[in-house]
Length: 212
Image (cartoon, rainbow, N blue to C red; front, side, top):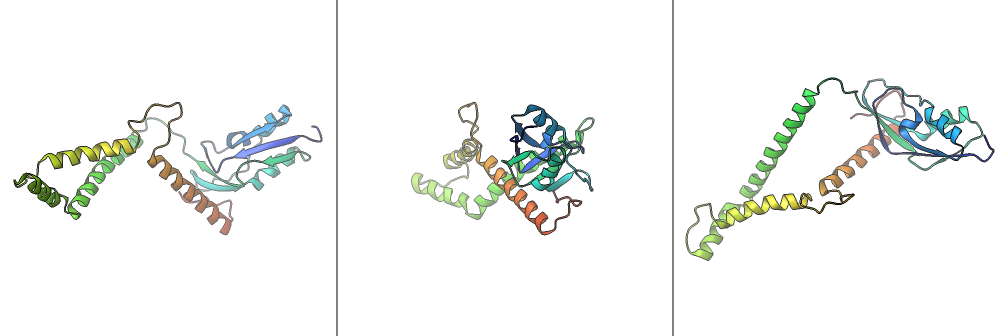
């Protein structure tokens, strides 16, 4: 190893693993001009404690440095990623995932009818039916039967608005833009990760996983 060898390390804020034995190459992007050092560091094992099995566990870059420096004491390490990160240990899938498919179907069912009920409740709350009836009678001079061009146009417009809002009709790209829902989900994940890391900082116990 040369005196000026530098190892560049980059770890994302949230890393998913499926094996309880975690190597640095599994969780980090590693680069070093000295390829034997780079390849060796990728195989080094990160000391992990999975007390409650699958879940989220908070670690620090200071848990990584000693592992590398124990093997290469004179190596210069440059951290380009997060200083605190979360390892999410996922259960290894086995067999036919019938329960997962049932949960997915149930979630789709609840989302569809939940959204429909929310829209109907909103329309009822603002008195949209009465409004359409008055508008129809104002412009045509005839009472509305509740099934006119206004109601039909509104129903079609709600459906089209949702499809367009979530980019279902967007032009295909090599890297499509994220939908508003994906953006909000990413913001939510960032907030969750930040909260878990801050909570771990207040109660630093590596043997206790962060709650899901």
